[in-house]
Image 1 (cartoon, rainbow, N blue to C red):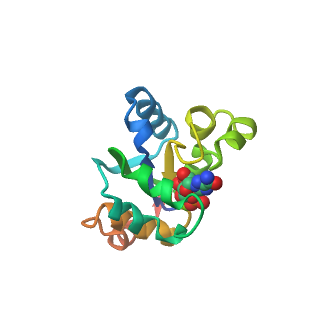
Image 2 (cartoon, rainbow, N blue to C red):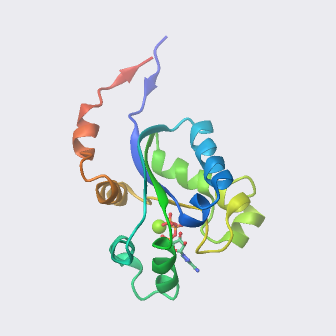
Length: 159
Ligand code: RTP
Ligand code: MG
């Protein structure tokens, strides 16, 4: 019998600097990616200048946490991933858990932020929140990766 399989969706995931600074933590996040059967299409380590950080988080300009977020994200190397899965955006956000770490610890133990997050800023990971932001963020980190080309290349698959 054949079962319709929905197409793969892309998301951009980041392992933030405080996690990359402790390989046991970044390795645990990497294991979570593998355990959840994401396909890793691209992966790289990079160190932002504060202007990169400001550009990436421009939607949060003026929020009370903006300045410390921008400074923190350019404080050391991080790792960027392009992940593919059915409903990758929502799945990765579920794996990360809530933004606020004390909330994550109480309502979402077992998630990345619930188990490994330190503060609301040093909360281990980032994930795109919509198809539009995934496209913007993938292009931000991997300008040579053509997302629309990738989506078009996917054929309906049966199994
Ligand atoms: P992210 O963008 O990092 O995947 O997380 P998110 O959608 O859950 O959170 P968002 O509202 O987009 O915020 C981006 C990052 O800003 C920091 N933040 N701090 N202190 C605070 O109340 C606060 N709120 C947000 C977090 O580090 C969050 O990841
Ligand atoms: Mg966000």
